[in-house]
Length: 456
Image (cartoon, rainbow, N blue to C red):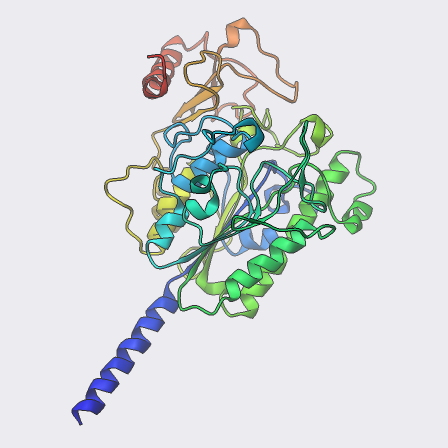
């Protein structure tokens, strides 16, 4: 009898433990690359089709005033993964490829705690599918930064069929499974990512998963599905090539969404969708193609077009559906927000900059938890590096630039003040009319950046 009771208790504990494991939400965070603010149907685009991503917005919460941590790839990803402003996370600019950094000094410091490490330490299996661009030495590669599994490319971009990193040379093959270089020539990288994502989600495990799907698109080279090039044949170039790539992304997202549904995990999976920063107007991107909507600027710029991005979170179990949030927020907020939704405690000794957005997600009347926000790229001791600080509706940009050429800046615009409530297009410098506000925000920036200067 006692043996029967003991066996029954063990069975109940086993069942209870597995039910708890199954009830813990999976997390899928999707980060696209170089996608403009308005380049989704749900964000107002009328000349391209994105029904699958739009469905995330229809069944989730969409932000209208959401910011990337930086206007360029590596610093933005560092902020996204650590919950810190990239300066605070120790990453000031794009990570150099290994042949330009043989000692491996560049990259996200291993002292930082990534979302992968946070979720892994709380019983999740963790995977990265897609682009890394945060370091190349073993301890700075994905497996050294909390990911159980990695499939993708280490550097900033690849050709999606040969999987080579084409730049000024040497042109290097860049496709890896964990730290093992693999070869799949001629196979479209988008299809490979979907295949890998499905396999990762299908693993026979009682652990929930955390998957970071860093889609390397619509970053150049523009290589959208030919059927979409045909569908957009009436658009001018480069919008045609760009739109075809965005619709290709949408289909990839739709495949993963359908798979989650097929395996019964869709409603138990938190899905986040965001671009890493604004669209590119680089030569390799045919000088454009993306659409920032009403905003000025693009990738590399601290103007809204460089840092304001589409951002959506879907989790109908706990969050509203088909709602907007106009409060300003930042990609550094995903770490504490996702932790709260998964009932995970953040390490109390490890301070981050991100804020928990759950209260405002549940209640649209709750104000933004941010009083100020900071951005910076380049070496802090270089007085000409780009930076910005926002406090309330006021935003001060230091050393502004507009890669699109739409706005021109003179010597008197080194400190460029705007009020986003009265003019989100940032076409006029208000610093001469508001010297006290300019000084206030400039002092906020100087106090923040001082700790990062090597020559202080």
